[in-house]
Figure 1 (cartoon, rainbow, N blue to C red):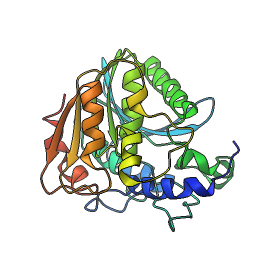
Figure 2: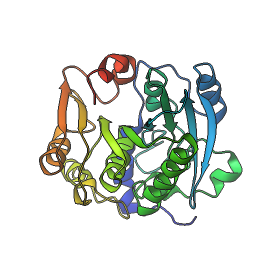
Figure 3: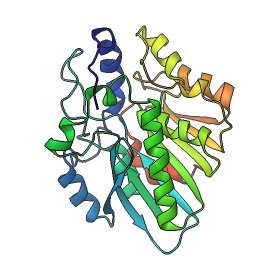
Figure 4: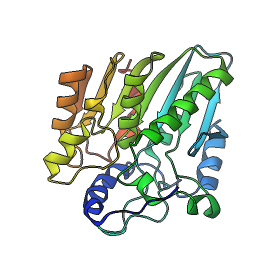
Length: 275
């Protein structure tokens, strides 16, 4: 994988990377593959690596029996930037909010997926270039990897459908997948900038070159809920409203929640109100 980070795109990616900061009230259990695997094992989640044409995606799974539906959680964008012009050398999240959410889900078939270039050893990380966790994080190659990963999970488990759950930037991935596939029964996003072009315009930033805006993606959404926080200054509700107006789905805003707090902590309760 090749490619550098253009200077003009640095500001965009730096601000957008704020989407990846985990919930402030979750434990500091991330930062490395070993730590999250150990944490997941203690909660009944088994590690698996999904090998796709372009990326290796970390999966943590808990599957009981032969489920008809898989609930798949997609992580946020990863580690915070060092400065507005310097992305992290490793995008592995220190607080993997989507993993905390997945672990608290009582469903019979729960799968957590990391993002491209997260949770890699030094050798494989060196082969994964920075644009994949900056301005190309929603590129066609990324979507294709997730499509391949979902196909593999479906074949292995015998499941027929998916419920997709995405936190922050992971919600953008989940929405794009839901628009592309006919086997997604439900979509849930949490603090996600679903119309990325509107999000960028509202922040006065330059475009995410090479990435796909879910607003421009054809297709029809399944039943969907978009959770937002009234105090979320990272993802203004305008980008969610625009997406919902054109694509459907129900917006549910919670008072006093921001981008970080308190999604993982309160997820078991919120999940009961989701499709």
